[in-house]
Length: 157
Image (cartoon, rainbow, N blue to C red; front, side, top):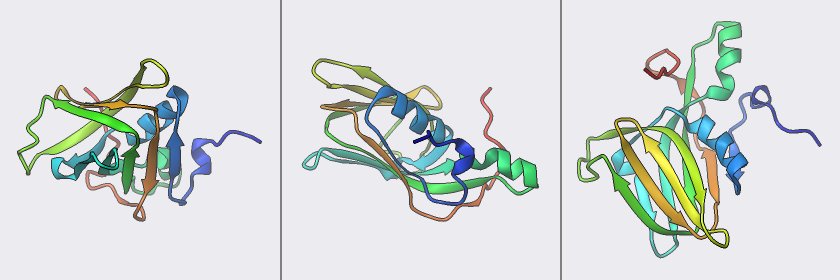
C-alpha cells in the first residue's frame, strides 16, 4: 500500500478523515484560503458536530492546471468536526450575516485522554476554537470544481 499523492486527486471529489495531527495537516493544507460566509458555520450541540460549508481552492490541482494552461479551480466542500464539546470564536462578529471569512490554517493541541482543542485560524486575526473529546475532522467535496473567480492562486502577504 502506498500513500496518496496530490497528483492522484484528479477530478475525483475528496473524501478525507483526520484522526491525528498528521492527517489534520493534510486537511489544513487543502482548506487553506477557503472562503465561507459566516452564515455557513453551524454547531449542533445535541449531535456534538460543528460543520462548515466552504469554497476551497483546489490546491491538489494547481500544478496540473498550470501544466496544461487551464484555469485554477475551487470546489464547495463540507468540513465536519465530530465530538465537539464547546465552540468559541474571536476576532469577528458572528451577527454580521454579510461577513465572508477566509480560513488560513488548522491546528490541534492535545489534552488528556485524547481530548484537545482544534483551532481554525482565520484571516484578520479571527479564530474558532473547538474543544473536542477526540480529533475527528471530515472533509468532503460536494460539488464539481468550478473556475476560481479571481483566476489567481491565493497569496499571503
